[in-house]
Image 1 (cartoon, rainbow, N blue to C red):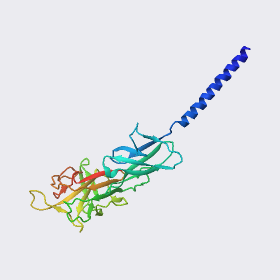
Image 2 (cartoon, one colour):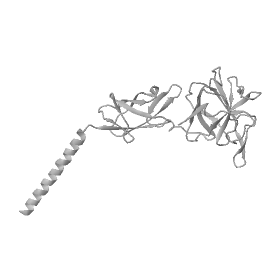
Image 3 (tube, helix red, strand yellow):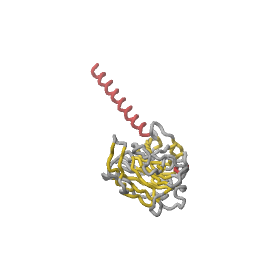
Image 4 (cartoon, one colour):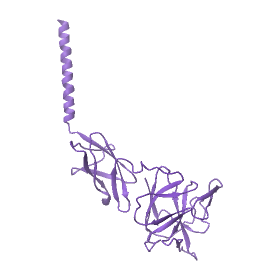
Length: 277
């Protein structure tokens, strides 16, 4: 009799646990399902919030939690930035598991934002011996005619004295032509013969002549140099030339940290910004 009662108790307990398990499963499925969206910036952007179905959501522990909508392969969310021209609606995949997306500027000139499944540089395969860049923009004070300009690139023949004295090639080893306010679709390949801290470039006018500027207290005009920070071999860079004051004060070569041999001036960070992917 005692054994029979024991078996009855066991059956009741197991039945209760089974019912509880089924109930929990039903409850879990009936609770409003949540979609977790993880958005990673490519570049220096601050995403304020997202909007889904007219409701604003803030980041929660690195993710945005929104209701899961069944029966849809994709949904529309709005990315909200402090800078209004970056804000806008985007279509993203829809599923219950975590949704990982990246956002980045696909066109810097027009501030066009793109949202994608992967980093835009994931399929980029750099070739040895080249740096990859996109350069756009215009400095109206340097180029008042607003025509495209060019950059002549010098190589480095040898490095002396613990890496601080370099000997450049006499003539440019390459030239980037027709830089304008329009961002090119393809990356430009800059050939270099020896990696170093900076790639030395000389600004050329639309006529492919050396750009010469007048500097205070100087009797003659001088050349203008731009030193591009050495890009990472696994990434590419985007450089935007900016309009602004052209009261040049820097005469130093960025590699040697000494005065440019021809007394030319060097562009400083007031004239451009580097946007790295």
